[in-house]
Image (cartoon, rainbow, N blue to C red; front, side, top):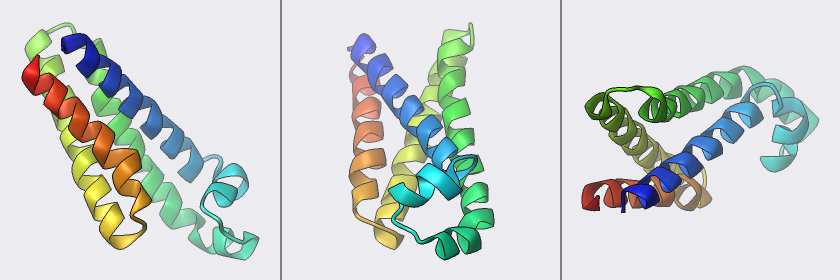
Length: 119
């Protein structure tokens, strides 16, 4: 089960790296298309989305620490923290932005937490 937890955590990590890129450096090109925004909407929302992208980057960094830190207890704590934050942020996003966020963020993070618990 530990391998499954690591695979799921890696998936959540890569999803958040992608979201970080969409909301920051790719927002006015690929991000605009993914989020279904006009050029004018993207220009207006770019600063806020860049800020939001930074937070998603921080979540990815927390998960990366879970893979890179040599102390297993500390690495485990970072993985749990990262997955829990992603799950909570996904619930908030589903309530305030779009229900799809629940399935893209919360479900994988929750599955990762369950797999860690069972490991």
